[in-house]
Image (cartoon, rainbow, N blue to C red; front, side, top):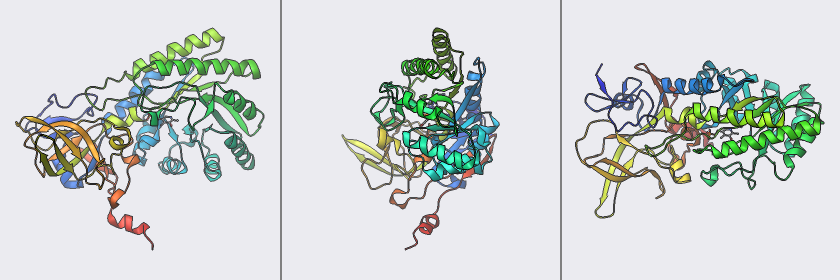
Length: 445
Ligand SMILES: *Cc1c(COP(=O)(O)O)cnc(C)c1O
């Protein structure tokens, strides 16, 4: 074993908890040298720090443990879903959100208890609803008037009384990228609170014997840093619970406040702690419930990015360095927008480090780009890397766990990278590398 020294380029919170530099300056994760991991598994490679993942699951669980009427933390699987991750999530006591038949299939294949699943989505097919009901999915979050009718018919045929939430859009504009805002009025998800659609959805659900309305749900967006949006949404959701009580004489026992908690992609990001987030929600829900004369409901939160995002590092190999004097330096790596679409899609900001050696060269701002046939194929804009960076060096990009592998594509027929979980000096492949044969197998022409 080499002795490890943590150097300041691995900012805690941006990098997973076991990331460190060895005495000779090489990045290690889970006690393993990234050069060895790259040698064994190839690049690009997603390295998932399993200890960090478990610690994050536990922090979320513990933050809501003291909720007066009980709480569920349901990991939003769309951030990154694999059987191994499902098992970790289950072992750590979390529930699980799925939004398609495909995500449901992964959860079931991993043996996740169906009663601990929440099924979301604005256009679930009849076939997906049938599978969910047949599998015994705990809660279906209904998102449209059509779905209410469809789900009631499916549950009826199956002879099941299906637990449901109504998805509400509370009219809150979270301060985040417009593609990931989901609380405001003008969008595809859910029933508007302001227009009365949410109240109307409740009216229809309660008349259907095959559906058991147990709660309401909202999710105001993704990668949110300020508490204001969450507080306003919680306030409006409790008002709706009170209105439902007044109209129907029922106090719904559950309130789902969604996910959306931001993470640190770079040292400039300062997300609130899980504990502060939980405490903030509790204060507002307790206060609003007291004012409305309601018992505090069981609460559900659905973090995705905040559970898995910071756990994973992408390791790439540098292939070319193109220096345009007075203009810019492009450093090309062996992946790109096929394994990280977030930079191109959301103009997301990342950091990167030289991972395979120590360099004493001065840092120089470069554009880290991919190998795809598009000039927007950028992994990291303007990142300081040592001026002697050269082909064959490994670079590592942290905060790659959420919406990287799950949004990966085969653009340019590039096979998608593997995910390797590391812990205590041991590595294991949890999603294997795709091969050209995998891709050709789909091409039956
Ligand atoms: C995407 C999503 C989440 C998770 O969002 P994060 O930003 O990853 O925390 C939670 N709930 C619903 C309904 C979602 O669509």
